[in-house]
Image 1 (cartoon, helix red, strand yellow):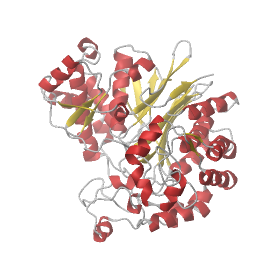
Image 2 (spheres, rainbow, N blue to C red):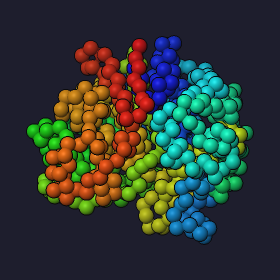
Image 3 (tube, one colour):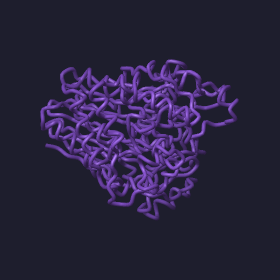
Length: 512
């Protein structure tokens, strides 16, 4: 069973499983195809995180394939250039792309197929093209301006100098050629060779600091995941430098309430969920960064006793001031989930940060480069200040749920600050209210956005008014603003897999 943000990604994943590949083989093939078919969202010019569940060992492992800041990147140097913040659509925002190294490392440890074989479907779709679809068209219309600053991006991702139209074929021959080089030479072509040289030239030409040494020095890391319990389930998340601890903190807070008695999507429940988000985001923004540079109090943040102190701060009828960043959307991420016939699972998230990342394409390679570096602070006293080689705080956070030590659910959500909020809502809908996974994903969704509470237009008017009476500033937002969730549930009795896909996007779940 697979579920992803684009039908071709899901189709290729199922085909790999049908050919005898395992969950990791399918995941890498899907990641490559989504690089082609979801180009605003993901690619080897970005970062990647994954969780892997081994059915043989009943063990979850975590792979951090996020890259650090260039060695020359310091607060003093960037300020001397004249910036008070790192500009988002600029070479300075490009940190080391770690995704490809992660693909190779994950395949080496858990895969059974060769990278060259898994890249073939992506090469095919890049060479022959695919029709531009609704969600991609929206990204072009709302965020494509960043591409127009850079001639190589115009040549690669525009059609005759304009944004493509709905249904028009998008062909990426440069990306196909790059994937062929990777198939022949492996990741070193990117981190030590020809493709990397084009990446560095493009970044430096756009005012950035990235060097070949920055690329060759990159190493992805296998790290220990973090977890908490929620009503008899174990929820597994990615540790810092990601915001995964925020989801676990939210669940710890909510576990102390009789959620079911409040009613699904009632004003009383949404209020408590929102306040839990605010508490967790305040901690995230204060503490979460690269743990190799700064000690992050992860154990304390995830303790049940600490959650009780946070719960005591929540007033049942009065909203607290927001403590979240006011930069919720749009962010550029794709998430997908895979469970194979043996019961192995992969929770996989890959991102360029903003739609189309920095807007910088690396020469003729077709590789769009992320702008994750903009999340660093230029405040020398901030926990997430930029430093040479440091990884920034990441919103990306793949998740899993275990029941009695066995894989129960693979789940994640694209959407920056919306990610933990959306996963929390899906889990509450499913665990507390017994919704099927597709219904849990399709249910009413909301999101904390700075000092506002964004809600879907279908929210019942009495619920909206009750939330406003509690002090929430309720605003509307389009459906795409609430993240893109995908999940696979494994029935603990029958072993049947049930996939859920995000109806707010062009997603699909497929099994065989």
